Each structure stands twice: as structure tokens, then as C-alpha cells.
Amino acid sequence: MILIYLSRGSYDKNFRGLGRKVDTNKIYYSYKNLPNEISLILETKVSQNWRCNIWHIRGSERDLIIDTGLGLWPIADDIFQISERPIIALCTHSHHDHAGGLNQFKIKSGHLAEQDIFSNPTRKSTVADLIKPEHLLEYPHEGFKLESWCMEAAPITNPVQEGDIIDLGNRSFQIIHFPGHSPGSVAVWEAKTGIMFTGDTLYDGVLYDHLYHSIPEIFKESLQRLKEFPIATIHAGHGPSFGTNKMHSIIDDYMSGKRSMICPV
Image (tube, rainbow, N blue to C red; front, side, top):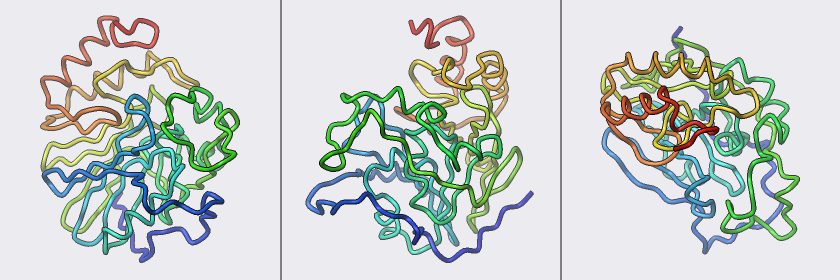
């Protein structure tokens, strides 16, 4: 299935904002340009051990944003200022640290298996009950209550599933369904370059396999499948990017009983 997105808009005009005036003198996001027309965006007010990697991939006809962070500070309008093309926002799964900013975008993509969570998020279903005060270096506004915060609803406009293709004009990416961390966890694969964006399916750290709706047995099957891809570069959901040798090392560690939430060492 080929997914060609023709919408001209990028910013969701129905986005209500955060109910406050943003201090334009503060930097809420950092940008780092990488090879292959890829940029890494990070939330500067979220701790390094909690923030996700937000990926911006530039195409000739449209751009792709993979994951959107917590969304506590406006992100869509920032990206719109550095891109002249329509933007597709795709979340690798519906957890709060990856999907909190999805509601700010007009074109919202995520896997069908988590469509209901995107539309009707709760603290439990988005695992927002795990976030702690030390994970935020600054609160988004006065009176913000972290203990009751939940990400805004972001009904999916363009659902994806295994094998779907996102066409950016001069390059295309395939959706790979890797359930286990969550039912609808996906990776984004560019066969031409050997680049894969893995979300929380794989990163260099403790792999969260015992969360709400995680299934460790299925997670292991997904990791075994991941090893079959001719990977050149993994751009992960957290932490640094790495190559095929590191990928195999992390997966082998996990399969041997390490790197799990219940046995992190």
C-alpha cells in the first residue's frame, strides 16, 4: 500500500495551545543536522533520561516527523518555520514521551492497534503515570500539575500498518510493525540507505518490556525479526544512533536476560 499525503497544511488549526504565552527568549528544542537530510530534535526542558528523540526527515515534496515528544511546549509551529513542505507526523507508539505533541499536527499517523489510545489517552494507557518531577527541568506554565497531566487527544488521520509506504517524493519509507513494547509499536525503514527509526523497540539502554500492554514474548519475536534487516544505521527512540554490530549486541544482551526492566544489568 502506497501512502501519498497531499494535504498542504502542517499545523493543526484546532490545536488549542497550552493556555499560556510562551517565553520566546527561551529555547525549548535543540536541532542537530545529520547526514541523509535527517535532523535530531530534542526537548531541552526534559531530562536526558526521559526525553525521546524526535526525528525530522526532509523529502522533496513533504517532510516526515517521527515522534513528537511530550508536547508540553509548542513544536509544530517551530518545525513549520524550518520546512516549506507539508509535514507528516508519525508516532512510533502512543506513549506520552513520544506522542504528547502529536495533536499539534494536521496529519497524524500511528498504528491501527493503538488508534483508540491516540483518540482517548489516559495516564495509564500512555504510561504517563511513570513520569516524575525530576524528569522535567522546567514546568511549562505556572500551576502545571504533573501528577494529573495527560497528553492531549490526537485522533489519527492517517493510520498505518505493516508494509505501508510513506512517500516523501524523492524517498520512501516502509512501516515495520514490531509489537511487544506496545501493541502498535512500529519502526520506519528506508531500504535504500539501510536506515531504520526504531522508536522504543530498540535503543541502547534498559528495554521497557513490562509496561501497560507490553508483552515480553512478542517483544522477543520482534527483536529476532529486527536482526534479519540489513541495517546500516539505527536511529533509536532514545539515546545515540548506532550500527549493525551494536544492534546485534543489544538484542543478544536482552535475549540472554539482560537489559530488561526486571533484570536491567
